[in-house]
Length: 389
Image 1 (cartoon, helix red, strand yellow):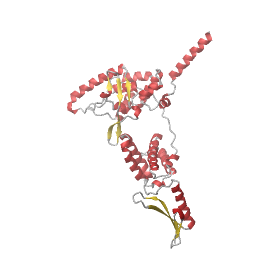
Image 2 (cartoon, rainbow, N blue to C red; image 1 turned 90 degrees about the vertical axis):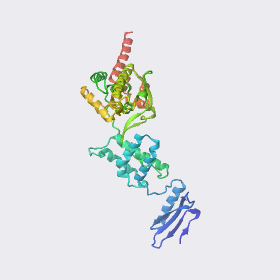
Image 3 (cartoon, rainbow, N blue to C red; image 1 turned 45 degrees about the vertical axis):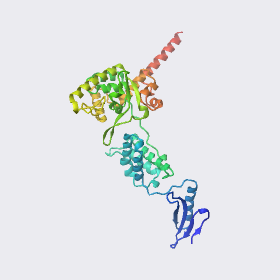
Image 4 (cartoon, helix red, strand yellow; image 1 turned 30 degrees about the horizontal axis):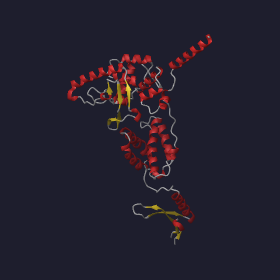
């Protein structure tokens, strides 16, 4: 016979096989209005009482989570699909890659409620040490951070939806970021590079990047409608990114990346000459020209592949006899040379489209050799003047 407890706390009884059973109310089903009952089993009365009281305390304090058989894989896929209307297509595909290639193969079969911080830490550590699919070592700290970010976002939402009480990602340690050495063109390198690439098909693109610090995707996504020759301005409104199914036009990297940039007369003249040459090719090809209105494109008008474009830049650097640098380092070169020329950090932030001046300062706040020498010369002149008085 079951022994009833007061105040709806539950009931306890001994079963025919000698074990004990307890039941307690843990809420109501909104669809039927009926109470939800949870059953506990144990070898002793004390065992089932302890189990029941623990759940009742959680329920009364608002910390009770309804058990579910939902797996990590099922939740990640559902969460990922739900994010689609709220993020860019490129970001959605990046999340999908992290889930499909790195998270689901390892954690996918674990029930959501059973996931522990140690499971996540072990996964990230292994990805960092030996996570490359080609077996040649580990993934970069940046990629490991992307994996963590995808899982953390999904688990945060699970907490909001009361599927989890706590987010086990919160206790995870990420691998220490290794800052890649920044390589830039000096003024002398820049002069040599431009001289050697004067007749290169992509010379106008190289020159515009050096003169504005555009990101590669922004450069290749630039349209003629975004260039105002009369005002000497260009507007960044889209970028080209590579998705799972090819090249895509998407929103700039951040809201701050949507910006307008003033152009030097030299850049305007080069762009005008480039447009004239492009128009001649378009008229020659006629219907075979795929007109996307792009400033920089293939001869048939189709978008340039960012990776192939970067390789062509690397080949041009090599032919010029210069030390290897990435295309993105032209952006760094723009910022460094601007600092040396006395351009304010705030102005550089606006041109680069950084979210904050703090970000710009963290990247480019270093003092170059030329700037250090200039500072030494100025203070030296002050000291000499003082000594002569």
